[in-house]
Length: 357
Image 1 (tube, rainbow, N blue to C red):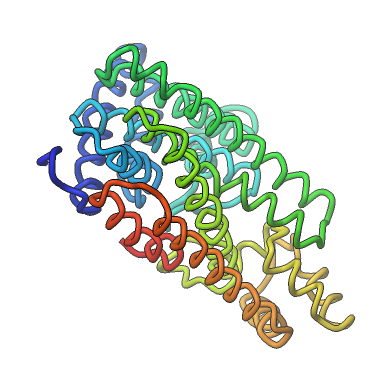
Image 2 (image 1 turned 30 degrees about the vertical axis):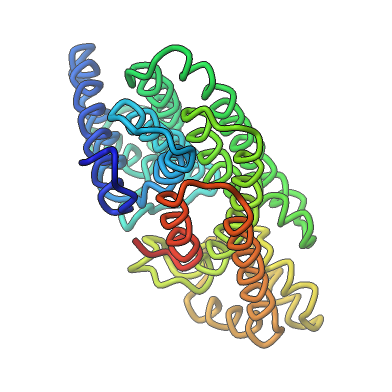
């Protein structure tokens, strides 16, 4: 990869994948040296990390760095790649909290280890063993993220500049995850509260903070940081809103999750809050009966989809996604960003709201 000239997203993504492959190979060697019992952990970490993933957080971090106009290096790319492991931690823990059986079309980590417990006829609860393993693997991913950053090869001054953004990203992610869990328990029907969850659970840690992280690596000034917030916050919310739509209307072959999975998990999304705001009483009762039902049939999912469409909620959310994306686009026009990065950020507007790459 030519670090001095490219903003080609697929090329950057390929380079990030290589850095992750190199890192996990070294770390898994160490795990296997500790004991053969850790072989399933090493295999699961490698499979989960390398099987798929759009690498949005490393991409935004790297493009955020390019936006400063500073010359990139392999060490900078490695530091940006470390953010993917924060995401891996979030996904593993998220599947436990949501009692989700699948991830990317394969068994989620807690389900895979539950199956291993059963296959090996180990003592105790297979389900509890699976949950315990997933929590530990998620924790390991978070530790690996910090380790990959610290061992990236960037100099101490650059690391010190970036650490506050790295810390904020992790704190805000955990805050957002808790807000998500709490909103489900609260059975909230508030659009405003659901938007706050969207901002912290996904928006800030997917786009704004990675951009800030990359910008800090490049020694950005406060004006660029503000431009990245003006771009990243609305686009991050649009990203989560698209996720909400896919959680009910998405194709399982593309999402890797069963149809209507957000309904089974009882997710209190903006889309559902909007529906509850607009639908008639009978329709509201049907939705309340479906939310959080793990045995929801595809027939019921289809009926809820129809209610959402007929209420006008889907149209309103699509309009909100478009407005937020437009706001992010406007930030690019008014901020001082290196032209190389600006092209990539314009491409990412479509990628994160339409889920392509």
